[in-house]
Amino acid sequence: MSEDAGQDAFLAAARLAGPQPFGLTLCACDLDAADGLAPERARALLSEAEQARAARFRFDRDRDRYLRSAAFVRLCLAALTGTAPAALRFATTGNGKPVLAGAAGLQFNLSHSEGLAVLAVSAAGPVGIDVELPSRRIDAAGLAGTVLTAAEQAAFGRIPADRQTAAFLRFWTAKEARMKLTGEGMALAPRAIELRLDAGGVPAGYAAPARPAARLAFADLGRGGAICAVAVLAGGGA
Image (cartoon, rainbow, N blue to C red; front, side, top):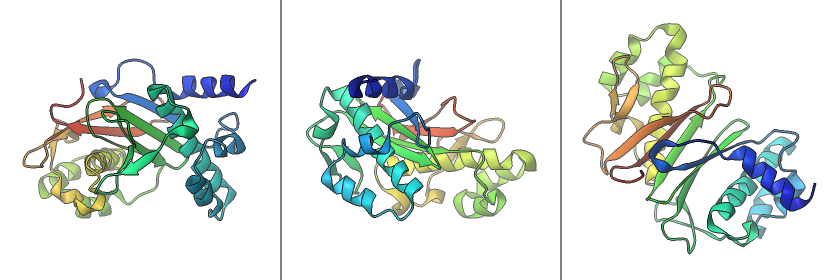
């Protein structure tokens, strides 16, 4: 298979089919797939700075995941902008959020969970995304006390114990996507983000008074039950 054909096949597998929340383009990549983008081919698409960062990883698996992830972002954005992957240039906002240099109107955000990478691309303003795999081992009940508001904790406490890990990951991804939306990250405390809950006590949106106002949706990645939340500014997206 030629290099171009291999990249086309990679992109075809990565881009999620069908309508996505808020008109976003969503792409997902298994960073550990043996038939995925080969690490050396991925390296050739990266900048010198990215290659230098890859060289600093101590373990092969971490290095290869980084190479594939960085190349994955470049290939997806190249397909949407018509720019060669290696020619893309990146900058950061005042909050440190990566953006495409010279591509006004197209914004993106990347999230990882173990060997899964997910990219959200928006043509209608900032976007935040977070993904978690349900296999992740966490102390959901313990973390709830530090991440959730009092009202959220009360609703979370009514969820059966065998469903609490999955439920907590919906709370967490919703809050993390909002934190990444504007690039504030942990500067915006998770408990400062209040969620609107549905009848089952799980997140259905963002409640006032969070500013700027944002909208929330969960995307079905079709990958091992992964829980993926996306956030856009209110009034943005489709």
